[in-house]
Length: 137
Length: 137
DNA sequence: GCAAAATAATACTTTTATGTAGCATATTAT
DNA sequence: ATAATATGCTACATAAAAGTATTATTTTGC
Image (cartoon, rainbow over all chains, first blue to last red; front, side, top):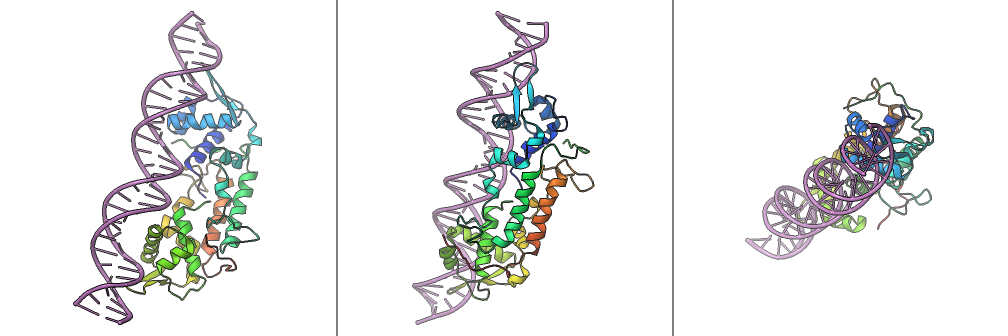
């Protein structure tokens, strides 16, 4: 249920940028706003660029802009890009052969949670967030 | 969504024992049946004993038996005992001040997943499993 | 009593995720 | 041109989770 720190940071960055989705954000500004450590944040930004969510503008006055509309980016896309979604789709007991046809003892219970997770993260888009509170810390 | 290996193993052990909940299981037999590494499994068994789910019977012909009825043990109890449930109850973006009253930008979306997770693991009991398949690997 | 067979405790090793440092490369305002 | 200010890459450092080894303790059958 908990995402990795890397996914958490990636979502934090992109959802922050989504408030004003056409402007450019320098890494420096993101570091100051989001309080994620410099190099780690830069690595995630590079990753998100490679995966096509944002694009980098190098050189003086450079930064990052969305390369794809936030309306086209689901939470699942982001999670999958930075850590892989497979981790969240497997058997809760770790059995590789577990499936609807060949269920483990916890399958019927767990599938409810997993389906809710997958349907939610697949449907949720960066364009549809509540920007009343933008936490900084 | 994914549990830690330790939680996964704890659930694997207890759900295995729940098939025949009054018998005694030696660590040796559990190792052979569940293919969890010897020392790691023993540590989890010791943990589960201390937390009162099972009790150990020492000495020759010893082993482990349920100390509490499987009907009284929810998935949440097990997860909480071995790794703490707090990890699964916090803000998806890691904001400590995030709450229904003071939501982060992803709160409304994520709360659906979290509530489903929590209600499921709180309600599910070790006594109500489908024992058609017991995987060994 | 004592050997056998079990659990218990402690400390160590390995692996993975997270975080950091330093240098290389790219672009543009001047 | 070039200095300034960005991003990009590679390798290293730290922390936490996972897994292992060793030795101690407990109980029972004989």
